Amino acid sequence: MQRTLPRTIRTLLGAGCAAQCLLPAWAGAIPWQFQLRNTEGQPLADAVVAVEIKGPARSSNGRAEMAQRDRQFQPHVLVVQAGTAVHFPNFDTVRHHVYSFSPIKAFDIKLYSGTPSEPIVFDKPGIAALGCNIHDRMGAFIVVVETPVFGKTNARGELSLDLPPGEHALKLWHPSRLQPLLLSQKLNIPTGQASGVSSLVLPPQ
Ligand SMILES: [Cu+2]
Image (cartoon, rainbow, N blue to C red; front, side):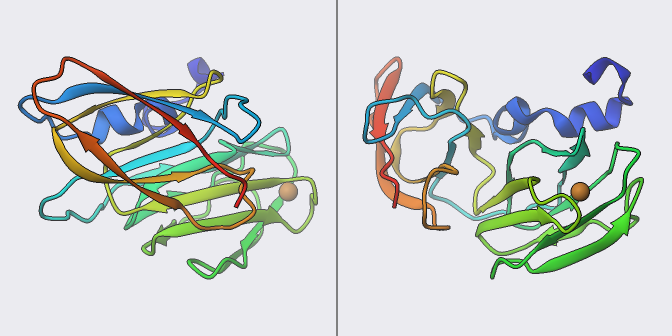
């Protein structure tokens, strides 16, 4: 799929690249693995992990992409830093009508094909649920976080991030959660450790 896309779009689509591409390089950063499970002990794929590192906050002026392909949104969960402009290209031959009623960003892109000229800027943290007025089965989420340090878990419910030692704020979310709110936890990364693991249970609400 990605071979046929122009390079800029491949870059935007690189969901696994989000954290690595935006992550500042810290001296003494520690490879830290997150393992997320639900209350039944099953691994949670596509779970959002965001780490708010203490220090001056930087706003994002980046861009990201929520595509429509084969009458589905791609990706199903998009994580962006607040301030990111999200484009909604339609790669299908049918037209879509993308909308969100979510309090963090209500919008409506009426029936269109191709790429709308104006992106939507997501400037408030939280979760926007997306739908399509034409295709009821289409649904996706844009998760807006206040840090450039984030990623999504793989099929085994795992994600690795290089993090500096310190007391950080951890934000977690998964589409199985009934509440459109990120779960907040503390994350303590000790100094002088080669690596670490956080095994976390994400309750449904
Ligand atoms: Cu549609």
